[in-house]
Length: 543
Image (tube, rainbow, N blue to C red; front, side, top):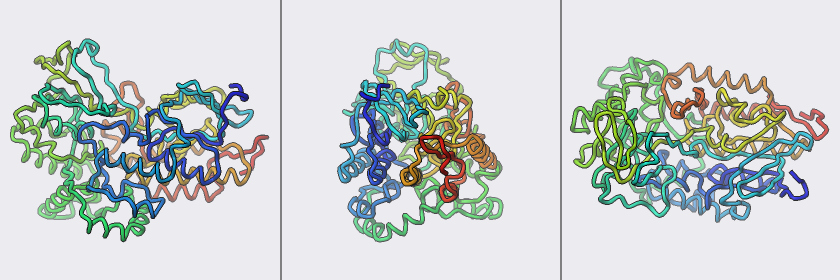
């Protein structure tokens, strides 16, 4: 890179979703000249892209919001218990306007390469818009679920109808009235979109490889009294969730499922089912995510509810998960999902019994039949946690790329840093609690820690920080060890990368939770950033 033509910044942030916007806000407060690169046309991250019917958060609105500004939380009022995509995007727009963030964001710009230059302790970046950028710090705030997974199917190029992905839904919307619609995938986006698509489509065929456990959201409008009462205790609530396990307030039981009578067991499960919360069921007893026998009792409770809701016994059975413990794949919240299969225009194809052979010009041929379609929707999720981080070519010390360094699976220290890649920070990266928690709580913790770290480097005049191999190896071992005490690694989930062909099977999130992780990160910082090498331009150790 020619230093004379490159644009020079103190920090470059990739991504203008919740983490990128807050990172920009914090770096500005440090006085750093900061640029944000964003591929989309505007702010919002995953909420800018995901506009499929029914797109909605599964964390309650009061919690799925920033806590860093008490005035912001008082000025904004949510309309529903679980906010829809348009309302969340409106909130993000409001934040960007309130803090005048857009002036430091370059939209419609993708990072293509990032190369570390050890001689000057800086990153050289290029973009798909032919910009050359030089920066001290590179912060990847690209989100955990932001790179769409498009499975390869024989004959897909031959299909004469329309093909869409829920993660890249047209912003003008899609009218499916009178259309024969096929949906492949029954994860969160499928579970949210299928009921609404079924209301409009002439016919809806759901192609299911693995059924998911989903609980009723019990969504409802928020009245003025509820909003005012919550705002009155917002600060107290925010402090409490910082020291919770999942970034939301729950009351986890300390009793085994086997320690109570069957009637009490059923009462607790039923209360959790009706609570409309993501974490309530698995918090009902202490051993549901540890003991397979205990887990099976909770799983059977949900399967019994499915059998009650779905009229056709064969369809109900096909919708009932039996191949993985409940909770080891992310639980979903839904509005009328199971009842949708009682509609006369909805049919389910169980791909375990009747696999897809190929896509044809007019639809999909399975081993048993051919199904004519006008619209094919991929609700197949994302290359989670690592896909967006590995999309650009990031080259660290000694010419080694991040893709090569993570060839056997991601390796980080605290989910924040990777050995061999100085001055590179990953917000809610693999090895952090991230997707097992309320993302907003985890995002703020990671951004605050990163900003404080950069502020300390500025204060001391250090120019480089890098995780040591020893600290990284120790953290990876710890993440795996903690996960190994639970049933999580037994689920063939995107937590492990199992939804992506050829992706290494490594359990990526840190399972010990928000409070424990926060304490560990704080101890690392208080110990002079233990596990990091920090040096100045001359390579002299300063911390």
